[in-house]
Amino acid sequence: MKLKLDSTITCPECGHVEVEHMPEDSCQFYYECKGCELLLKLKPGDCCVFCSYGDTPCPPIQLQKPCCG
Image (tube, rainbow, N blue to C red; front, side):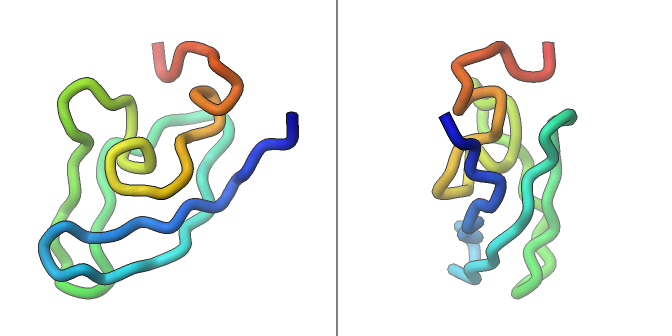
C-alpha cells in the first residue's frame, strides 16, 4: 500500500482549506488555521488533527497500526 502523505485540512470555523504534508513518524495534536488563525485541536477519539480535520487519515492509521501510542 502506498501512503498518502498530503492531507487537505478544512477549518471548521472559517472554512479555509489548506493542503499540508503529514509527518510519518509523529502525531500532530495542533494546527493553526492559515485563514483565521484558530488553533485546531484533535477531536475526542482521534489521534491527530489530520484524522480530525483532514481528508486523508495519518500514515499509521492508513497502515492500520496504532497511532502515537
